[in-house]
Structure formats: C-alpha cells, structure tokens
Length: 406
Image 1: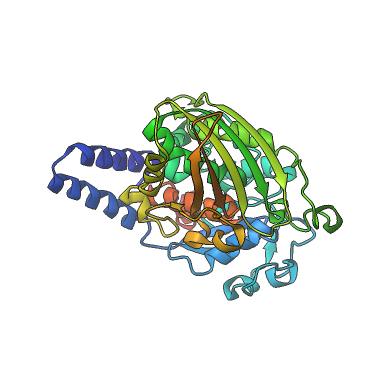
Image 2: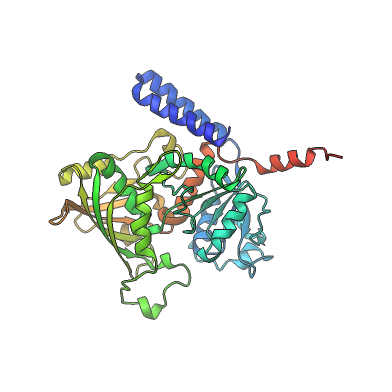
C-alpha cells in the first residue's frame, strides 16, 4: 500500500465513522485497524544515525524489544566508524546496551545502509545534508534534528496533534525529486510537551496568546552538556536558539496544511528558557489567553478527557490519554512524574486563573523520550501504519533482477 493512498483511506474511514451509525463506525474502525495490521505484519528494519549520542542511545534502547521495528544498522561520525557499537558508544543509560546492538558495526553516514528507514539523532552541524542524502537515496528519514523542522515542505509532526500534516510528503517528494525517500521531523524537546497540552485547549476554546517560562534539564544539552561549575547550585537563564524554537515551532504544529504549504496558527507566543540542575524532565510554567471563556475546572476536564483516535491508540508507543492531570498543589515534579506514561505523557498541574491572561498551569514532559527519541519512534510507527515505509531489500532485489539493456 502506498503512503498517500493509505493515508486517504484511513482519513475517509475515520471521518466517515464520525457521522455514521454505531455499526458503520465500528466497521470503519475495523477497516482502518486492518490497514495498520497489514502494514506492520513484518518487522521493518531500522537504522539509527548518530547512534552513539544521548538521543541515539535512547533510540537503540527503545528499539530493542519493539514489536514493529528491528535495529539492523547504526551509524555515527568517522571516529566511531568500523568499531562495534559496544566499543564506540560511551553508554549513559541505566540499562545495559541491548544485546542486539552490541555487535553491530558502526557505519559512516553513507546512504547505503541495510535498512528500510533511518532515525536521525545527528548533531545539527551535520544533520541537514546527511538527511537529504538519505532521503534522496530512497530512505524515509525520521529526524530528531532541528535542521529541516521549518522547511516549507517537511512535516513537523506530533501524531496526537497534526497527523494530517503527513499529506505534505508527496509534495515534498515531487519538489525535491525524491522517490521513496522523504524527511519527517519531531519538534524541539520543550515544544513537544507544550503543544501536546495546547492542542486540546485549542480545539475546545481557541488560543490567542501564550507566555511560557521553561526550566529545562541538563540532559537536553547532550553529553557532556553544561559544565558542572556552571550548573551546580545554579540556574542559567539562556539556552542558545531555544526561545526561537519555542516561539516558532508551535505555529507550524498547530497550523494547517492547505495542500500546497503549511499555514501558521497565528498565535502570540513569548518564551523564556532556563537551564536548571535537573537530570531529566522539562518543566514549563504557561499562561494562556483563550478565545472562549472557560473555568479552571472546564480546562482540567478538557485536558483529562483528551483522547486520541483508535488508529493512534493502536501504535505501540502511544497513550490513549497522553495528557495526565494532577490535583496536588505542588505537582508535577521531575523527580516524581517524569516517567509518566513510560515518558510519553505530558503531566499537567496547578491549573488556575491568570490575572493577566485567562488560565495558567504547570506542565512536565520527559525531554529525552516525549521530546526526542520517543517522539521520533511514535512518528515512525504512524508512518509504518499508514504505509509510508517500503521493504528496501525487495526493491533492491527487483532492481538487480532487471535485465541489462544492450
């Protein structure tokens, strides 16, 4: 099943189910679920670019027991090339290196990897052209890097927020001359949790202005990250490029794809970003102005009841309710709440009236899972379910079997 035809069939199924009788809705849901099963009945072979870094390591760990994906290739810089993954990776996670990854030989960034698609956890200094090279060579690229997020033909994707933006892929392929390859990105780590919380509020009440102050964990800076003498017992009120990302990316995520281009949401958005001495978890203090008046209890209920479609809920990494609302006056806290929903939830607390805007709240998300590796994994699952991945080993076999013209 091709990507665009699969996407259209699924969209028709879900839209039809909304207006049909209960029996018809169940039949539409069953049809869409069957499409997911059809596209995931085999394991897709995954490669990880930038596999030795913090986000790359998270991806390697998440792929170890994944029901749909099998890690077959790891790639990194030239200094790691030729070594086994166990030798090349300075492993930082609590669990040991997965056995399936230990003996894989680290390759360079040449687009000749034995896999069906690649995750990119590359540093932004090399990610841009490398991802284009892989897409041009026919690989779907599921990127965590910032280089292509705001490109006018590249989906910036949070499946629970803007799955319809995948309709841009055929346009991207046509404009760039890609065949089966393409690039899809996930947002910045601080954007991911924020927009996941803004989405249900936008749908229910409409949004006008957002003011956000972030308290971001040191792991967001990669390894070795911030020098200990700069961050220990301290707060650094500047993260290079972070405020610009947080003020720009939600506009695209909450905007629309009109068939030719992305149309921004047109929100007023101001951000202050700070680095704090916390290992994992980005905390954000958010004030929101909405188009419709709503009580704090109505806001809590909308967030509590935010539920994804059956299609998305069937993805291995997805949560049926991706926003968790806590009632305690001193929550969420990184130490207590960062792993909610296996790190894929946005946790909200302290919903209250704002004397300047309408509502203010505190949210927490896991910067390395919901904001990075887990986000890319969920994007890949949606792409697989909608038929955007192709078995490259079969395609290469067919190409080799073609007779050579005289």
